[in-house]
Length: 103
Image (cartoon, rainbow, N blue to C red):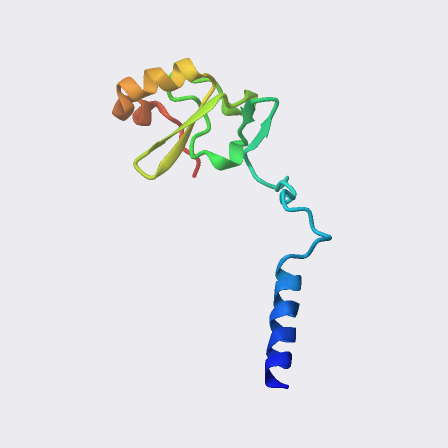
């Protein structure tokens, strides 16, 4: 009797763990509330996720759009383009001084 009960419990656990109704390759739904969203292989950044108001390399307001970001000394800096980010990376200290940080 105990062996039969044990076998029934094991079968039940295996059935629940291997639910045939659930596809094995099912992926969770994407989180659409994230600040960074990948659309058409292009990253879109939100002004709320960076610590500066203007691009530290060219001075362009980031409300016009953010093309890339960089982390430097526990802050996230936004840039209008990858070229401006590359310019910042050459001399980040000068860029930090030029960046208009949010308060």
